[in-house]
Length: 112
Image (cartoon, rainbow, N blue to C red; front, top):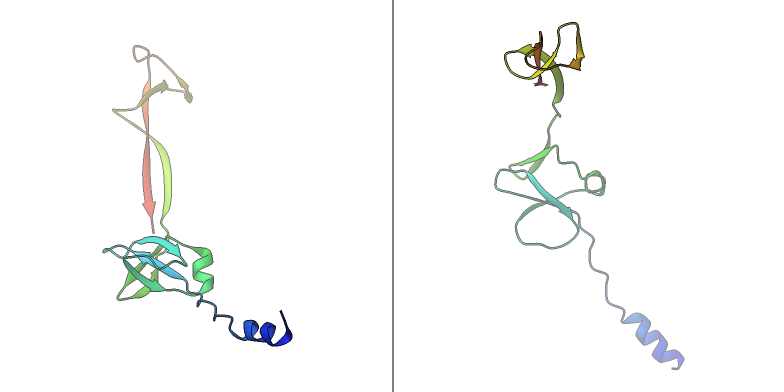
């Protein structure tokens, strides 16, 4: 290879493909995947920071990304008619249903 052939090859290097970041979403606006590939389906272009975070606490509304505040989930034991039979003085001690007991069950509460 001579010098002219070298420069000819160097000058004919194709342009690199553009880099893009996409969020694909379903018909409800829920995220399906973050990708740099061209896939079939609905998508919006996102910036690099959003792509790296890849948060699923978002929705797509009118082709705009809307962040959703995550809910706080609190689980708590509550006495009731159903649940695990426990000693009346200590919830940590599981007892037979035929003995004196209080039934405890786990309840989940969500807050904004």
